[in-house]
Length: 172
Image (cartoon, rainbow, N blue to C red; front, side):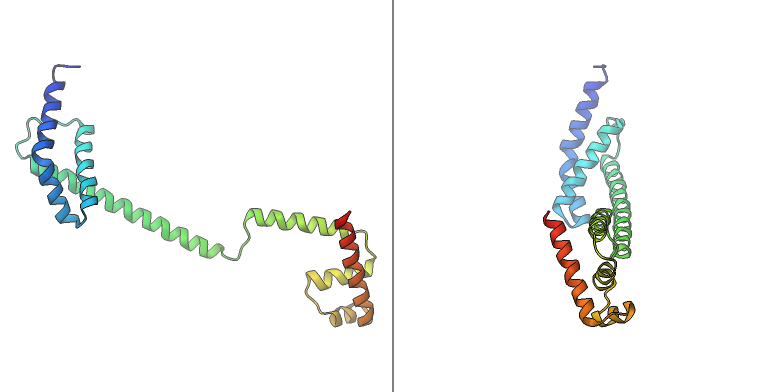
């Protein structure tokens, strides 16, 4: 330890003991919140300790403390503004992405489609077409019958065959 160290420590101790109560009261009135005032008073002394400024020669310690505290308040307000802007942007991004699938959901969907495609390969062509048109494209049985040139009864038969084929393929 250097010879200047003990005097620095005693100057900090003296500054803290003599002015912490005043600084806390000043900050509490300014901020309107005892918890924030206590935190900021502590931060003020921490900043002074970290800066290692010469506190032994201070002529106006309260002015020095209040200036340091004001700077911390300004820093806090700036940080809060940046944080709020970030949170707003994050909320807007979340709204813009609403309705879109996450990468995990896309992967799960692709895996399910691959499994369906594999199962459908073993079906008759017309049964596969009816299945895809009904379950994936959302067409009615009448629309499918018209599109494929089949009767409604034949479309129902193909859909039943397709479901049975899928059920059998999944159970084996």
